Length: 168
Ligand SMILES: Cc1cc2nc3c(=O)[nH]c(=O)nc-3n(C[C@H](O)[C@H](O)[C@H](O)COP(=O)(O)O)c2cc1C
Image 1: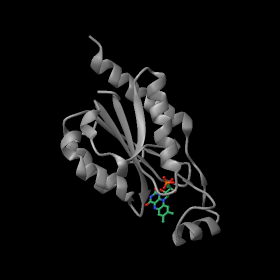
Image 2: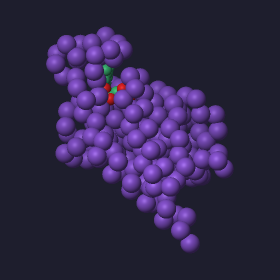
Image 3: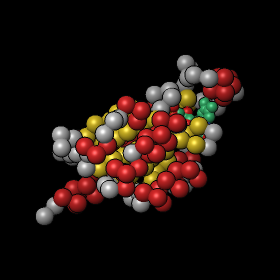
Image 4: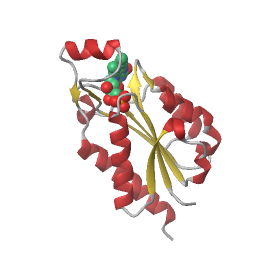
């Protein structure tokens, strides 16, 4: 097994990708081999000891690549420790309180016995794809609400749990 942890993400505009890269970086700093990959490019989740799945939220659901990843790899995911994160809210609520998973993500968590879920603030800036994105930006509701201190903190907890799992 060459990498211990996969961080698979579904992202339309790249901000969830940055979160996933940050999670992988924190794990590597803790001495755990980890890689972040677009969820749609993963062919074999069985190669990893543990998996983190992150999805950008669009209209109350995860980005389709993250949803499809969970469906396609449900066998592998049910046999190893899994963590989920969502990224979405375009305000500071995610930094202030725990935001529960959207219903589809909740159902997947129950099926797979996912260890933990967290919602991080999202990001929407000029250049985002789509008509609705343009409308949100024009109404002045865009911005970068990713809380990298919270993201690092959460990833450190994942690293600690992974460390605890392999300690003698
Ligand atoms: C069309 C559209 C729909 C969105 N729907 C939600 C939503 O239902 N819940 C939420 O928290 N954020 C929502 N957002 C905010 C995005 O989740 C946020 O911009 C996120 O950081 C995007 O991630 P990405 O850059 O990885 O694609 C929406 C944004 C757009 C443009």
